[in-house]
Image (cartoon, rainbow, N blue to C red; front, side):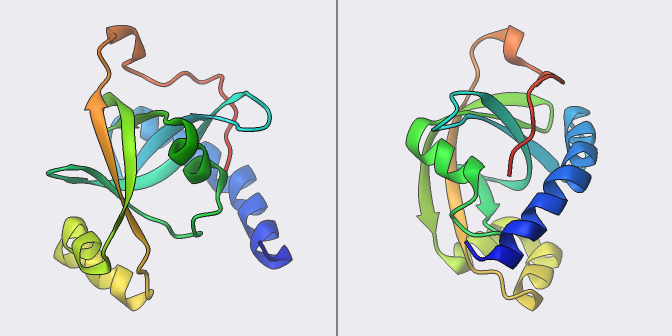
Length: 145
């Protein structure tokens, strides 16, 4: 990862992520939370992301590429997603074609994604979390990119 990109992600991590996590915890708005375990640290992290519903699961546009920690961690070890007031367990993560990803985001949001030349989408297959105790993410997990 380049130095500029790494610095930019660090600024987002310290400024935007805490605000996005607060919004996501309400179950409203554009943000969801990915809870994942660090591959090196073993710590649990919560990362705000923008996901959309699809018949097969949830769709993510990888704005910052496939080298961000949350993505690498859920690919290797799974995780949880808090999306629109419900918690899900990650079953698998699969590449998704650009056209299928854009369709999942709908007409208006896909127009913005096209303007921004976004083309890297993933289908995240999930199942509802069976334990009611996992309904809301906790405020204590640190954020991570």
